[in-house]
Structure formats: C-alpha cells, structure tokens
Length: 285
Image 1 (cartoon, helix red, strand yellow):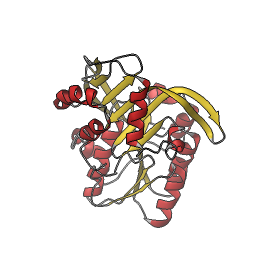
Image 2: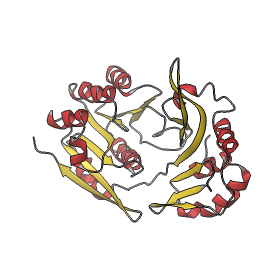
Image 3: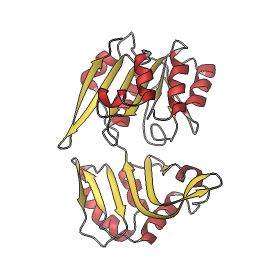
Image 4: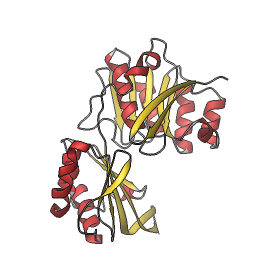
C-alpha cells in the first residue's frame, strides 16, 4: 500500500463513509474510529468528531479488515492477537469479543476499529534537535500519552541524525516507522518484523550502529533490549507511553531504566487543544 496514508485509509473504507471522510482531508485526521451502532468519527484538532453518516455495522469492520489483509484474516491472526494489524503506513487497532486460542488471545467478533493515520512532519523537533542531536549523543526517551506524537517525533529525530552521517539502526517492530512512505535518512538501517531484543542483537552484530532507535518500549522484553544496547557502547533513542516523569516512575521497568542511567534525557510531549509542545528534561543520577 504505497500511497499517502489518508488516501490509503480511504481505500479501505466502505464508499458511503469514504465520500464523507474525504471532505476532511485538509484537517489532517489522525485517527478514524468505527464503533458498531454509532456513527464513524474522525479524530483531529485534539477531539473526536462524529460524521453525519449511517451507523457502523459489524460487517463494515469485517470488510475493512478483509481489505487490509488482502482477504486473509487468518494469515493476519498473529498480529491481530496483539490487538492491531499494520498495513503500509496504517495501524489498525481492534476491540471485540476476545477468545483464548491455542496460540494466544484472538477475537471471535469485532466491535470497534481504530485506524491510526500516521503523518510525516519534517522539522517537528527542530527547536530541540540541536540539543538532542548534538555531536555527543545522550540517550533520550520520548514520552507522551497514546496518540500524543511520539512516533512522529522519533521519525524526525532519526532522519536528522542519519542525514548528518550518524549510523542509526532502527528496530521497526510493526513497520510503522519506515515502510513505503517515510524517509529515515541516508545513514539509517532498518530491521522490521522482529521484537526489539532480537532486533537489537542483530543490529549490534551486523550493522555497527552508533545509535539504535525503537518505538514504544513497553514489555519486559523491550526493557531487556534497552539494557542490552546500553552495555554495548551504542546510543539509544526510544519512545514510551507516559504523561510525565512521575508516570514513568510508577512502572517498575521504566523506573529501572531511569535509576540505572540507561536514559539521561526525556523529551516530554504535551497536547492542549490540539497543539503539541515539547520539553527536554535532563535526568540527574
């Protein structure tokens, strides 16, 4: 699906919705929300906006998922068990009736669908890139609540570093950072389709990265990957879900990363009334 993300999202939509949604393209929607029994909604300017449209039916969600997976929901099952499926630069999150299956949790039916429409914003971190991307790089963690702009900022900083000649190894676990649409800079090397720990080991063995970048540190395996990288003389640029530093310190894994000095800077992204602000905090050991 090698096309602009909003256009790609419209290709998945039933026609009766796409025609109404296309009118809002210039407002740069970040998400499309479909919930059975309710009108579809677009998320932009910091709020959800319901469309004046027919309510969503179960068959609409199934139709979108079949289009996204090339009519092969079965082959997408492993990803769907984690609650999402990535196609091109789109990420489809699903909710519904969960069921325990032999290979993990799956869905016997769907009730909600969230299509995340990623957007490349070059220079979004320009005001801070001089500090973050200085000649001596300091391990940096980017934080915000879900949907707060972490991945956009990460992508921009990777490109800035890689275009200045720094070798950046990118662990693109879900294919959201790099595939099809985004330029991550001339000295970036991307590994996708693997977890962060395995990806880190492969990059360290094969690509001699100066910095390794990864999106959404969350599981214990992700935490282990950060410790693995930190002990190898390679810089780390990563993101995590958190509102602020106090949120980070509430979770044992994040607290361990901070207390052990794996990250020495935190870039906090805040959003108020649809406008994002960026604050760089130095961490004292």
